[in-house]
Amino acid sequence: MIELAVNARGVGKTFPTKDGDVVALTEVELTVEAGEFVSLIGPSGCGKSTLLRLIADLDPASTGTLEIFGKPASQARVDQDYGIAFQQAGLLPWRTVAGNIALPLELHGMAKPARAARVAELAELVGLTEFVDRYPDQLSGGMQQRVAIARALAEQPRLLLMDEPFGALDEMTREYLQGELTRIAAETGAAVVFVTHSIPEAVFLSDRVVVMSPRPGRITEILSTGLDDIRDEALRESPEYFERVTAVREALHGIPVERANER
Amino acid sequence: MTRQRAGIAWGALGVLAVMALWELYKALGPAEGFVVGAIAGKTGSGVMLLPRTNDRAMPHIWDMVARLFQSTSGGDTPPLIVPVVTACLTTLGIVAVGWLIGVTVGLLLGLVMQRWRLAEWGLLPWIVVSQTVPLIAFAPILASIGSQVDRAGSIPWPQWLSVAIIASYLAFFPVAVGVLRGLEAPDRIHLDLMRTYAAGYWQTLLSLRLPAAVPHLLPALRLAAASAVVGAVVAEVSIGMRGGIGRMLIQLAGQGSSDPAAPWGPTFGSIALGLVAAGTVALIGFGLRNYRRGEATS
Image (tube, rainbow over all chains, first blue to last red; front, side, top):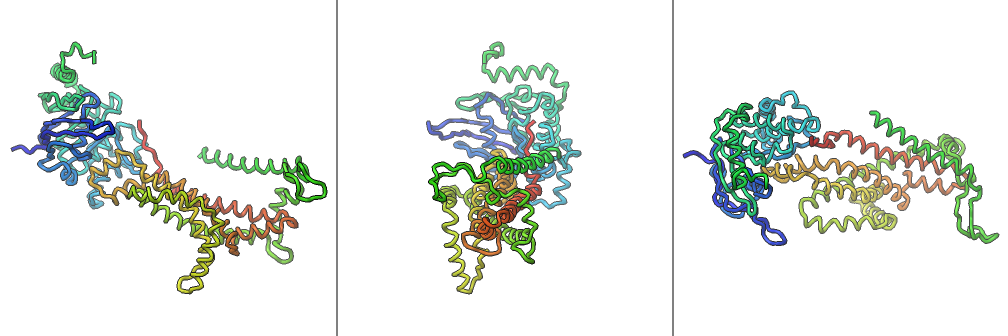
């Protein structure tokens, strides 16, 4: 049996507010296999970020069971089974690039020489070897985000959680980092759960695209992209890529694409 | 660097402006002031609208400076600047102790209030109220408690300790509030990140909350230093401790009518004291400059 990175069964999340409960997420059935790249896509309020936070155990699920590598989400968090990156790089401004990448290693008591070696390795992986002594305010947004990815990978997690990590970047940087991410994911063999609101991004990166819809947040469709492992610039111009983009777009709107501009 | 130089230039300009204003008013203002509603033959009656500008009330700035280098009280006594500097150093030492006590207490209060919301609700109002108690009122009380403890013999409690504690009473307030604000300063995303690392309270405190608090802490430390100076000077006066600049201010002010330039010596001394105190904190800020970096968003 293949071990599942994520196994969500009937997962729901309600937030109590003054005007009664708000259902952010309901009846989520989702599995992510080890090494699989899965994107969550949908309009604002569809609960995609909420689902990611549940997987990360940043918020508890209200209903259902959620297992990460066969463990409860809270245990997986304590065991450092996943690495996470957010839309903002979230680097500590008083630490250098090396210091930021080393943060999780430091907190978990890795000895200094081993830490330095691991940081050098990670800096190499994200192409920032020359910048390890810089401070975050001396880096571009794209570079900051690469540091955040290196930090997320520091503990060699088998699962990478990413919440619109390229959302705040310009298109050029974004496409470049998408390419980098597929390479890194392949090299590390980690499963990735990737939240985005960009259809082309989801298709380019993923093995499967999970389409979600709001009020209440739920999964409406799960599409396999069926694209092979090589994700390069040629893919962005291939007919099957456009075909998948169209398919995801139709799934998102729940109607043929001719009426897409009405949304 | 140029900004720093501009800062120095503006500072110097400010001092010069005050000096120019002083001399200008002294040159143009009425020698005996301007009084309305005075009853003839009755001294001190009426309301003074403009202060006197004669040499007794407003000595020339150069006289004040020259007085610093003339003998303190005639004869062989050393120039005034010597006892002024000695008194300033005495007070500076007390200020330093008071500042340290105040910062320690403020830091602990801030930590406790951040850790337990209930403690914040319980403590913060009292901390605010504490600052409304006039120093002059409770300084003698503290001094008498101190002297009784000292006389009991087991714990030595010199007078300067009372002064330092009173200084710390003013100093702890900005630190407590600044630490509380600073510890709450980390972004949501950073707190989330620490949670994903399964970091406990102490790890989060040391790696995130305290470093993130530095930009809030530095102004609080500076304010605490200024407050400690004020507190120490006021406490020296109200307790009547000898040897410090506070006592000297009062003493020379008493002789003001016969030696009008003399009280300005300790006045300048206490200004210098405040500047040294604030400058020391600025040095701390320089040492912590990496914690004041902002993360660029672009």
